Amino acid sequence: MRDFQKKFNLMKKLILFVLLSFVMNYNLSYSQSDDSMESWNSYKTPGHVHEMLAKATGNWNITTKFWLTPGSDAFTSKGTSSAEMIMGGLFLKTSDKIEGMGNYRNGSAIIGYDNSAKVSQKIYIDDYGSGMLYMTGTWDEATKTVTYKGQMMDHDKDAYVDVSETMTFNGDTMILKAFRPDSKGNQFQYLEFVFTR
Image (cartoon, rainbow, N blue to C red; front, side, top):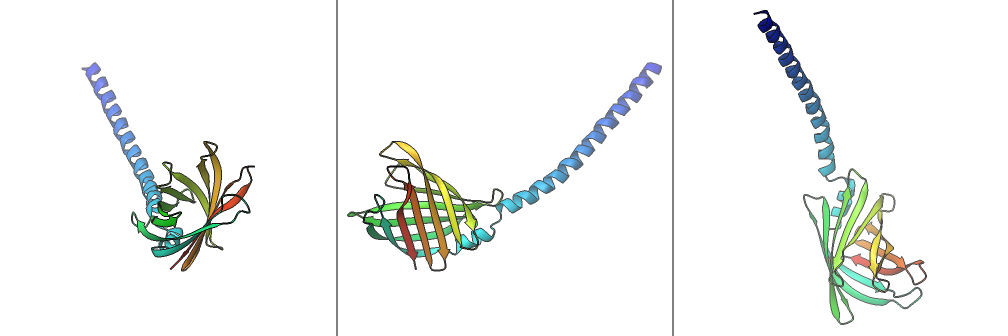
């Protein structure tokens, strides 16, 4: 009987210990999940930069300039763009149609801002190539400008090269300037899009 009583008391203590451990872990994880929920809500809620992106929704006329080399004459063309916010106001989706050299180039971008990383992000595709351009950048509130950096394929070299873009938002005008390396590796502006509505 004594052995049974000892085992029974030991079992009660063990069960009590397991229950207390469970309760303490539950409370700790519940507290952490509250913090996680708050963090996640902040991550998924459109903020100030998303509001700036939303101002770009609508239809735009585009005037473009394209330079093959530094100092060369620019090729000019015209086009249209439509932009809409998607995914609950977190991303701006654009669809562009640019006339050039007797045909049209169709392109599309998804532009967003990562609330946690505090970084602007952009993915661009068009029917002039099978690759995707992915860029990240910083938002300058004073100038209403995003400066992006990324890499794109240089078809002459069959290698990726560093590129950058600036996108300035100014009410009914947006200006995109794109830069890439010349044959000597020096960055130059090779593209300009002026959006007006």
